[in-house]
Every structure is written in C-alpha cells, then in structure tokens.
Image (tube, rainbow, N blue to C red; front, side, top):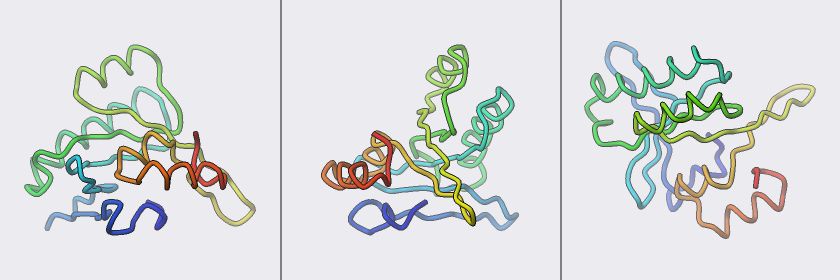
Length: 135
C-alpha cells in the first residue's frame, strides 16, 4: 500500500506473517475497526474465488486477524453474479487502476477505498485532485 495512506493517523498498514509463512496482502486499522485486504491482479471467477478463500482462511491461521472486516481489491469489477456472491460472503469489493510507466507501475485506489481505510475526506480529495487517486 502506498506510503501516502500509511501514516499513523490514517490507519497503519501492516502485513502479519504466520510461522508457516502465510502472508496477507495488507491490513489497516482505521477508527471504524481493522480491515484485512486481499489484492488480486485479475477479475476472473478464479481470481475472486482465490481472494475470498484467502480472506476466509487467513483469520483461521493468523489469530490476530479474527474480527477484521474483509476487502477484496480488484483491478475492475467482476460480473454481477460474483458481485452479489461477494456481498453474501460479507466481503467488501473495491477496485483499483494500474498506471504503467516505462519503468514501474503505480496503483491508483478509489476515493471510497481510501476513505474506508481511514484516509480523511480532505486527504482523499487532495489525492484525487493531484491525480494520485480515482474519484
């Protein structure tokens, strides 16, 4: 996750690791409660199934993740049936866009995702205005 949303007052991001080397994509701890985040690079049914599986299993093997809200972060929105299924599983769906440069790629997160992760509305507006986040 970007350092821009990694400041202590905006919810510190961390990556818990289990002794058996399970590693989550990210967690944040905003004022409304901790969130477990799984990031995928596709929107196929297999990507969604894998993400939901990880969001389900990680709290069972990493005790400090019990009680976290769950977010699946995808580079777009999957088909309507999968969106409905995610809602039924209690998994929040958010999207991002990947901007590819000549030497690196930058992920742009949506304003809704950043706000959900604890970035204040003013900070989100500033990031959107600078082209560093999606509206």
